Length: 191
Image 1 (cartoon, rainbow, N blue to C red):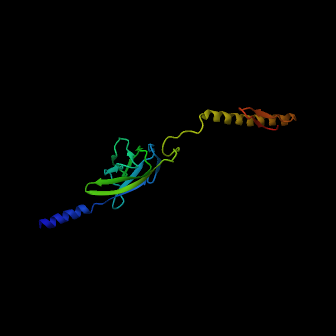
Image 2: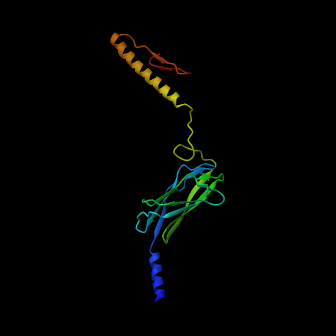
Image 3: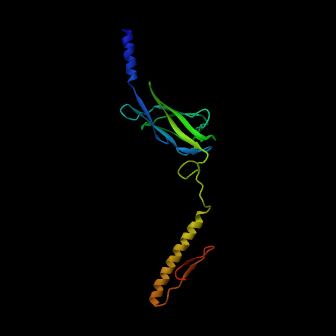
């Protein structure tokens, strides 16, 4: 009888199922030696698809080859899922070896466990972009220069419209408006 009870207890524990899937960041390409600005997010759900809160999710980077460390400086990071069943890790500092990075992810809640591998890529030829990985560097040094040019152009057009409206009332021909912004000059109106 004791054996039947043990089998029943094992079957009850085996019925608990958690599912794990990557919901953001899968397949992202990073420049070698960069820091990831985008996170890797997983979702932990039960067998009915309901989010599992309080599950421990372990993210593990490879020990060698294309890899890196998490913001903590370690190759393993453990995050607990929130009420939405999600866990996110970000800020990985990638090493300078290009290739495929396989991140091993394991979720544990009680006796239930699930695992998967997420793939990231490190590439020497990737340039950093705004909104993506790395740090955005503007292509020009002064935003104020472009605001000044826009303001002068708008002022010239407004001045030309005013001159034209005043000139038509008096019967005189409209005057040309010339605006000098460095070299070459910009001429608005008739030459």
